[in-house]
Image (cartoon, rainbow over the protein chains, first blue to last red):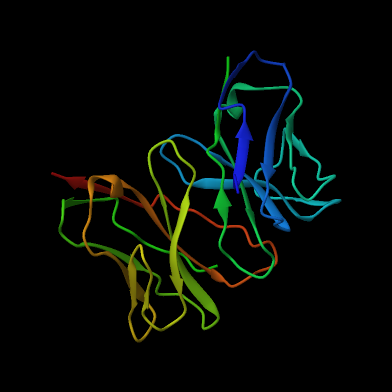
Length: 112
Length: 112
């Protein structure tokens, strides 16, 4: 198992550009999450999904969109990048029957 | 989810036990104590969790006081690779969203 994989590892965007952060898990987990982590801070939940076709907002969803067409993939879309979205983004997943979350390696995004 | 309080930072000598405290005085009867850690620039990693009994696994031990208002994570023989930020999280098992609420954690520095 590769676990949770994220691409790209690093990205620099200009203000107003858009991009999609990819997240894939091969553990057949129902739940998937997107978090962001600003420097020196804990993680904040952006969006989550309890299964294919079902998504919901977390604590800080503004400026982001998600979709969940398959169990494996949970992409995060930034439509109009802003400097406030400079952060490290982590994807995570878990089975519905447990609380243990497995995290990807993260995507470091800089918006200039 | 109950609030937790952890020291900002701690040092530990390599090979010695690292004892990381966490206060959660408002914990409810159905809330578990979870520990995750985040090694620099990586995604968080699950360590251990418990409800009221002490728990041990291959990574660490978790000691929860009888009144459940505090707990201690013990790394029995700390190595340099255990240098990380350690997060204590209190939450209901398999809550509605299931997301983890991360505070600032304790930065553990293991020194040779």
